[in-house]
Length: 253
Image 1 (cartoon, rainbow, N blue to C red):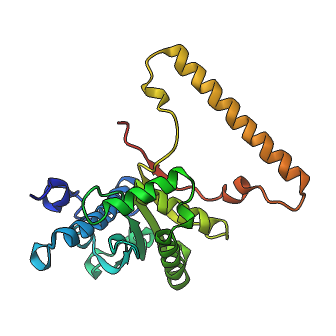
Image 2: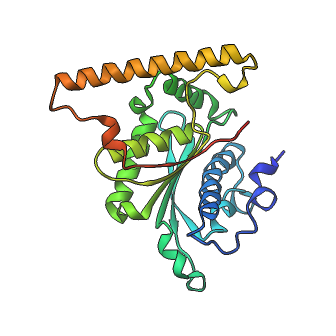
Image 3: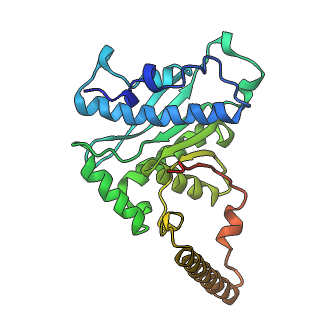
């Protein structure tokens, strides 16, 4: 049975027949649709929907993108990302098109279905252990990003991702930022490791956790600063990344 969320005609932003690339809401909607396109692309593969039965293409074709390349995991052969190329017809050219990307590299989130669930959960665990950068999936992703940037230029490339894919996009963007390349990035529900403080009803417990978190953060900052001062040649990683500001979207739920 097909999920409504996979069908663009039921769940896609059909009102965006003309995209104003200066409009932040329009850019967000397009980025989210391209990420969903990767997810549905993998679902098409899993359930063998091909040709006219495939549900993925409308998620990018509606906005005049073409699928330039699929990014495939070397462990389970699942499609975890896609490189899209923007190819608008002449009739859609307007002043805002100069703000559009030439390429968008998008990464899907975890899919708990046979064919991807085992590998995706392994990678989810690698995020918790801060080891995502050591995985072959990330290596494939960052190499794709470097290649596209080398071809198109940093101002013409966007990153986008949801959940596990947002972690991949965030890490790729951070890696590029360390080299002075700042890519526009759209991160949806990026995973983070933290106590769910806002869900705790007891105000005293909530306040205590906030204080503890602040003390730990301050302690880590002090330790980092102390180590940096011991080596005058060291570079503050926060200062290096401060010029890169990705767009982060978090569902309140």
